[in-house]
Image (cartoon, rainbow, N blue to C red):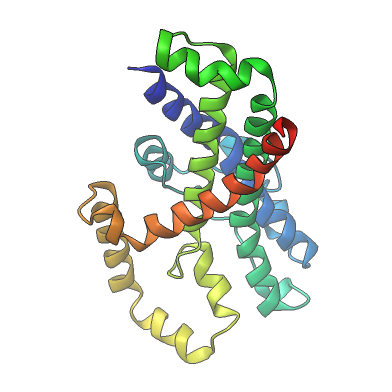
Length: 233
C-alpha cells in the first residue's frame, strides 16, 4: 500500500472514530436544545464512537468513504417546535461534517504557510522523500474529502438520511404519506443506488452526487487556501 492509499484509509478510520460520533452527537445536542432528551437519556449525547457506530455503515465508510452511523433516536412530540426542530436536528449532522472539513482545511493551509509545507510536495515528487509536513497535508486533504462526501451524501432527501427530514420542513403531509406508502420500494432503490455508487457504474462526470461533492470541496478548499496565499504575497 502506497502512502496515498494509506492516508486515505487512515482518514476514513479517523472519520469513523472521531467525526461520525461528532455528527451523531450534533444531532443529539440540537434535539436536546429543541426540547427532546430521548437521545440524551439513551447515552447518545456523547462523542464516544462505540455509542454511535453501525456495522454496515462503518464498513462502507472504510471501503468507499460513504456510510452512516446508528440513527439518533428523536421524538418530535417532545420538541417545542416539532417541524423546525426535526429539520434543525437533521441539518446539524451534515453541518458538523462541513465544519470538520473546514477545520482540516485550515490545518492544511497553516502547514502550507511554513517552509517545510511549501516544499513538502516537491520533495516527495522529485526525491520520493516523505516528510512530516507532507503526511499532514495528505491526511488533512483526505479528511476534508471524506467529510464533504459524508455531508453531501447525508443530504440526499430520502429516508433514512438527514436530507429527508430537512426536506420535510418544506413539504406537507401528502409527501410524508407518499414516502410512508412506498417506504419498502424506496429502501430497495436506496441500496441499489449504493451499489451503483460503490461500483462506479455511472461515470463521475454524469454522477450528480460526485459533481456536488466536488463543488463543495472546491468551495471549502478555495476559502482556506486564501490564507497561505495572503501569507506568501
